[in-house]
Structure formats: C-alpha cells, structure tokens
Length: 343
Image (cartoon, rainbow, N blue to C red; front, side, top):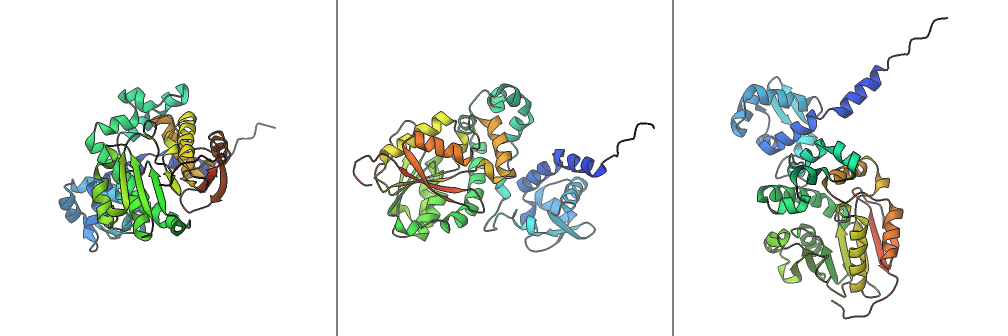
C-alpha cells in the first residue's frame, strides 16, 4: 500500500496567515494618526470628502478603508461611502473611552521588528537600535514623549472606570500614586472621593503638565506633586495607600524589590500597597505585552506567584487579589511594621 498523502489543513494555513499579518495593525495606526474617525462623527461621508479632510490620496485611502471594513473596524453602507462601526467609535478623539492615541507607530514597532535580536541575546532590541534606554530616549524626543503620554491617558480612561469600582477608596485618607504619569488617574480618584488627599510621584519631565491636569479635575488643593526618581528620592511616608499601576512591568526583579522595599519603609502598620499590573495568568494580552517588554527594556510580565515572592522579599505580604476586566488588582501590607509620622 502506498504512502498516504497527508491531508492539507487549509483552515490552519488561513489562521496562521492571519496571525502573522502585520498589515491591519499598521493601517489602524495610520488611520488613527490621520483622524479619520473624527471626520465621520456627523454621519457617513464619501471617500473623496474623507480624503480632502485628512489630506490623503483618494485611491490609497479607499484601499486602506476597505481593508479595515473587511475586519469590521469601519462600515461601507454604499460603495465609496464610509461610516463608523462600534470599533471605529472608539477611535474618535471625543469618545469617553477614546483609543485613538492608544496605538503608536514608532519607535516601539521599530524595536518589535528587531525582536530576533532580543530573543537571541536577552537584550532590549530598542537599545540595540537607538543606543539609549527606552524612557531616556522618549524624554529627549518631545513629540514621541507626547504620543506616549497620550497613549497612557487612553489606557487610564478605561482603568479609572474599572479600578474606582473595584476598591473601597472612600475608606482612605491619603494615596500616593507612584509613577502616576501626568496625574490623570489620581485626578479621577480625588474627584470621585472628596475626602482623599493625594501625592503624585513621578519623574520631573513626566509631571510637568500634571498641575494643569489636576486643576482641570478641580483637585489641585488636595494633591501634592513630587517630581523625582523613585529610585533616588525617598517615598513620602505614612500614607494610607501607595498605588503602583503599570509601572512594574517595565522593571527587572531587582528594581521591583528595591521599589517595594522603599514603599515598605515608608508605610504605617495599617498602610497598604495597591498594585495594578498585567499578569501572565491573564492570557493573550499579557503575553503580548511581555514580548513588548522584551524588546523595550528590562521588564517583563510576571505571574501572581512571582509577585508574591518579590513582595515577601521586600517585607510585604500579599493580602488580597481582585480580578478586574483590565489588569489584576492586588493588595499587600507590611510584615515588619516601621514607625513614623502619618502623611
């Protein structure tokens, strides 16, 4: 009997081709940069009208839009006329949960394109390409830094809805947001809880616009801004809670332990550390972020067990875990109680 011919699995071929295709992610980013979704807020428009509004070549924009229609990002109710779909609504600048600025083109994608280097050397492809640490590079390129901060605000808008509902914030008097960026999340938190005072703690360049952000929330009188490196400056002592949100994923284990130890040294016996970070047990999104960290710097996505080990090393114990629609939210308290004044 002759050798049986293996059955060709065309479904698997199609699945693999779709997973490996990088065209659509790039097109989404380009459409976001052009602001196409904003042009459709008032209703369907022709490709000629869209092209004129965003300064694009008509046939080329038509090809891009039809590629996105094929994935449900936009709709084409009539040939050559386009309108918003539920996904496209999220790309409008004025949408309450706008994700228009959540997707950046450079320099992150340049580093991802060189991921082979990181897989083989365990070194960040970003530094290999640009000769600098990722965040140092951003700090010296104001346009890229502005794009990065806009992407973080886009994520924070979603997180604030989830996190403000996931914890008993009203029981706290003082919250220190470590690595809190421009103060967007802390502004939301203080506005929703008038009895809380806050401290925003991040790099001087990062908090430059925080004064205006907090003023826009109407909470400037209840929030102190500290522009400093948390590895070099002391953590404010005696707060009820210390919040670390999407910071640890960019740090190596030694840096995380150092930060945890510094926070532990600033805590009162009843203080708590609140951590909102991607965790590897959460699935595909966290796995993809882990690869992004591989090419951008020393950080990585950790498992809950790894977080517990790092907390214990720093004198903290994990006391509570909360599942949310975004990233897990965990609480830790000091094992060894320092003494000192309350913030």
